[in-house]
Length: 489
Image (cartoon, rainbow, N blue to C red; front, side, top):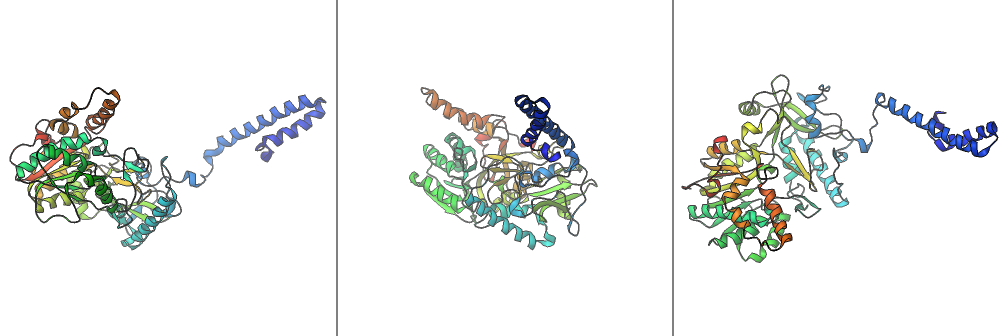
């Protein structure tokens, strides 16, 4: 009967035959049999649903156990599982993942990679599998995982050929401020021009130029301000360099693509959304007030794991925040080293660092207990850093207090710190907007929409900050004349 209850049509037919003999009327028997059959099936289904929570879960690809950062975020809210030993003092903090690294399933409703992207994903997955095998104890610190996933030669997200940037491209993953509107670059040009005049130079060095959108707006705007720049671009992606060269070819400007840091530089350095893509160290406070370092292991698939932090990492974290059991976050030590290193070669001028983040007292706020790690894939944001290695961007917000301290350690001055909205307004964005043609409502709306996003507190205006560091600059910088927040760092 249990098997028949799962097949309402056959059950109804059987009941109809029985009722035919009872009522001696086929129509009445058929109707009654159909109704009775489906009622029995419905009651059986309700009985199954009622008992389902008592049954063991079924592991299917469509219901794969959630892994990566999302699962780690819930670790403080549930009893800690029995640790699986991967090496001495290394414990996994997550349940089993998919059977193989290549089968790591998305924890949210994300687009599926196309066949070409899937083949690349498989290659990167095998590379990361070998990296974990070669790591001591089979534990790959997260910053090394992120380094390989983003920058492994020919494999990483920024060194392979995926689209990455583009607001209107379905193959892009995220959009930056310069791509929203050229008004961003035109406003920034006013600050760049002041730095160049103070430094007595016309040299601009842009890091991570992306699609070339910022240079495409900045160079003509500098010309309008009476400066013919010598423009250098340092970008690790060969694919992006090609896109930049194609986009900027028509400017007739003096543009040079470089592969190494300069030995000495005077002028203006620009880094828009560069620091956030540098590999970060993940940590977590355990219940005993000890700092645990988070890394990646490979048991039945890629999993996040933790081990006791080194004395140096324990000291660094302890100096920046109090112990909060279950709290996990990041340190961007590579970005700090990069900022400190600027002081070795930026002899006169300033670096404008534009990114999303907070001062330290906000970054490690008790309510921000899940960290800031974020991934971007096909304009979808999520927090599963183990998903789609080589295909997705992985970022973390910036601790601007740490960057300011790093600049001071490199012998530079902190020249200004404020929100992107205040910086752009100080640089005359309102004047630039006033030049937009108001006679065409469609064009006006198309121009004003991105400006609203740049300035809005709910969008990029408050979350994004601008930090100016350098040396040999005497006067106050235009972009920080009002609303300078250096006192909050």
